[in-house]
Amino acid sequence: MQNFLKITSAINDESRILILAFLQENGKLCVCDLQNSLNMSQSRLSRHLKILKEAGFLDVDRQGVWAYYKIKENLNLFCQDTLKNIHHLSLNLPQFRKVSCPCPKE
Image (cartoon, rainbow, N blue to C red; front, side, top):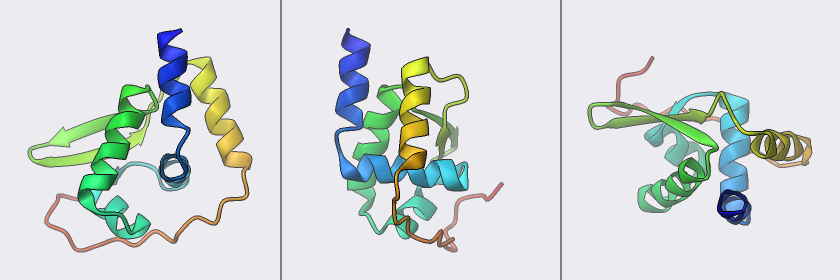
């Protein structure tokens, strides 16, 4: 029950839905590219990413001080279904805008 509440709470926010859809579309991204593309402050984006990670949607790959986020590969069925439903929404996703940040690009 606790996991269900954590997941539903995580997706009960338009910004987090947008982040999930954006990562589905663009794959693994550093925080600076997400911040630039989604036009969010670093603190706001980090808060949303933490909530999505704790709910089980995201994996983070840390390389020194840099963090790269992606959709988790082994999602539970509820998270999988949620992402499928998000994929079918008619979201107007912003265009991916790569920035020249100091993080190492893969």
